[in-house]
Image 1 (cartoon, rainbow, N blue to C red):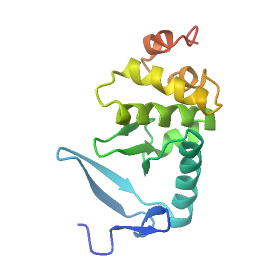
Image 2 (image 1 turned 135 degrees about the vertical axis):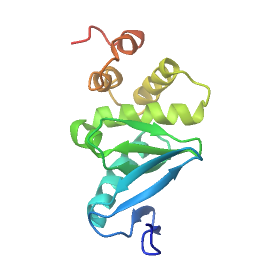
Image 3 (image 1 turned 180 degrees about the vertical axis):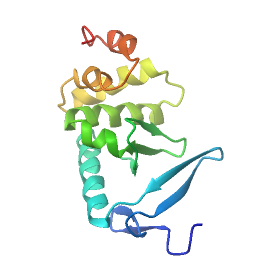
Length: 160
């Protein structure tokens, strides 16, 4: 059960949970999907959000980002314009790869009819404009299973 204490509050430019460690929050995604978001310590969550905000600023974009505590490598964008990224992806990807993921999700938000391949191509242009390595998109896709065709489509070379 979600209590009054379990809500999101803004503190400056950072939005963070006001729940205790280990508590889970049920968060409604649109009108159909639900995810359990586990709250980490407020300071750690703020540090991670700051890190992600610095990357989006370098991409010359803005995004409202949430971190989902999960062992699955994944990220996504909601129609509202919010981006979510899993804690597993944050721990396994480097800054270049995180930038590629965020650029891809921002491409979906800004071009809401973009296919996965189109979002990848748009994301590569965002990465280049921000001074990131264009190969970052192909490199991050290698973390995900079944992305061989997407890597080839964006000119990422051979899939290792």
